[in-house]
Length: 61
Image 1: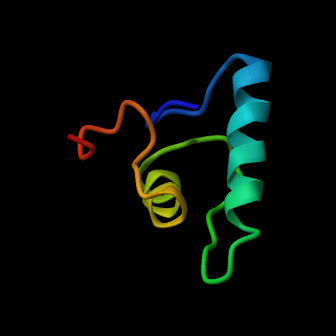
Image 2: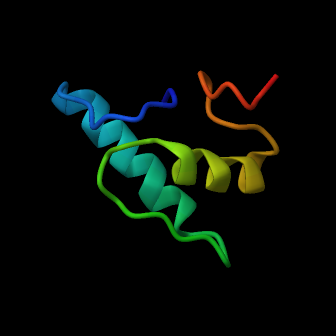
């Protein structure tokens, strides 16, 4: 899943983003809205869990 500021129009990408957000919500202290937009908050939560921002997030240099 890549960083994006828009909700995907491709149904498969939307499901992947929602699955990632649901997975992130299984970690203690993490909560992101499950809506399919893998933006800043999803990327922040992903970094807390994995140590890296989502691919495509310019903060991960």
